[in-house]
Image 1 (cartoon, rainbow, N blue to C red):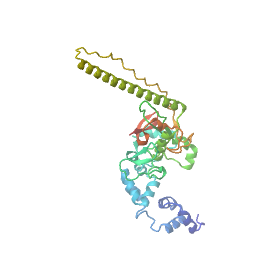
Image 2: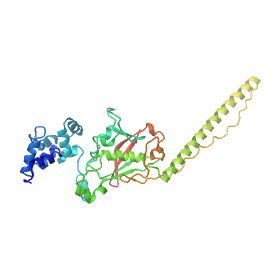
Image 3: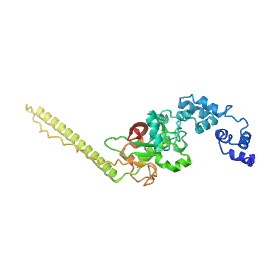
Image 4: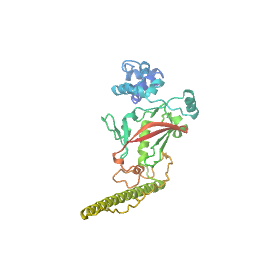
Length: 344
């Protein structure tokens, strides 16, 4: 290492953030330390060493406080993204996910942690028509590109989970296929070598929400949708016939009463009232509740609302252009954390 000129090391170190340079590269050897001193003369992060800032910020228990600090200073943002301090990682929703299943089970049994959802889910909902994200409380920003969303790479829950199911509760007797996000299966040995330990993120959840609504209908779902729509049409027609029959009977009765009064007859005759026609019975729908694999590519490309000719799962919701869905943490089913979409 000492044989490498410091000018070359300096050019290499410019590709790393200051936190990595100070905490990882500087202690390697004297040549690295000398190159770091040239790159960062103060050898400190905003006036203090990174280790001291970690101790200071570890006393902060609020995610919003850390988020505001990260927005104020790029040094703080780098520190929070690169820190190995467990308390800071937990508060900023950046705890690593245990790679082995035995470690995950041990953590779950030892502490029995309560799963807490990311604060972003309190302020953001997904528009079903386009699958875009909007703020439904603050109204200040409306990000349409999920990748540009600042919290998209943070854990969806704390502690993180490797498997998560995004589902839509039955509405009007209709069930949509849920989306299963399984980050543990995509890690394995390759994830261990690459150091990938991130659990399910906020961005993963909202990508799954969009995937849920734009997934093409299966044959079973298409049949169920047609039967439901045909039943709705027959039901409305039966109601219209019943209303028109009542109006005709009322008009006929008023005419007979008027004629009897004008003729001076004391006997009034009313037409017999027939039994109302029964409304068509709701069909028994056979739903397709098979899980959608999050990593699996879609069988049909989504081209948008106006030009897309393929039937999508969102077509179960007749008023989808005016509806939004919010994701909130639900129960755990079979060891899988569930996120439920609230329809509003």
